[in-house]
Amino acid sequence: MLDVLYQDDALVAVNKPAGLAVHRSKMVGNAEVFLIDQLRDQLGGSAHLAHRLDRATSGVLLIARSREVAAALGEQFMGRHVRKHYLAVVRGWPEPEAGLIDYALPGSRESGPRREARTHYQRLATIEVPIALGRYPQQRYALLLASPESGRFRQIRKHLAHIHHPVIGDCQHGRGDHNRLYKQHFGCHRMLLHAWQLQLAHPLDGRPLLIEAPLDRACQALLERFGWTWPAGFTAGDVATHTETAADAR
Image (cartoon, rainbow, N blue to C red; front, side, top):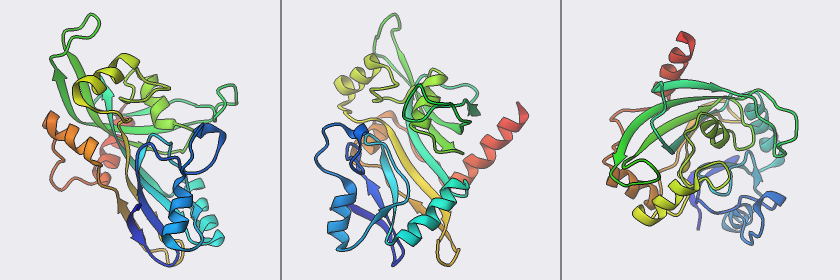
């Protein structure tokens, strides 16, 4: 059964598990189980996707209970009125600690036209592990919070790979040697990207909603193993203020 984070007559938010395809498409390959079908069975009624998450990504996924609500939510996403905040574990320690990646991206087809795309990030924690790989006797990793302004195809994954700090477990845009290291030494077999928060206005009455998805056991266990703790009183607003200030100063 899917973990429901928020529910009313207009919309539902669930904590999507990593590895579960959201819906049928050419991009999900041989998937046989789809989140939207499971949710319709679980709710016993209609369900319409308001946005998408990659199959390998976990976290907050928003579903409308009617086509009218789906259209209203779609307008918020298209107008960039929804604030999205992701947690990611990446190779290396990005510099500066808070910044803006401004790099145009194509759609699902790499040969397609590129469109502007911007992602704010903040480095939350770092670690250096004594495991030899290649010519380095130790490996550096960081926990980031990434906040995309736009919603391009695989935007966060492509942007972090572009600055040479790919997401761990990303088979398409990451580093196979580091992905294998995490499987062999840390028992981690998933991509370490999690949609942590969505901030939006309710499509019917306009009241502000903040929906947050807890980490799954695999991610939580890794954070604990690395000694990474969530800052007390930390909110996504802190990141937005910090990263926008850093970007303006550049």
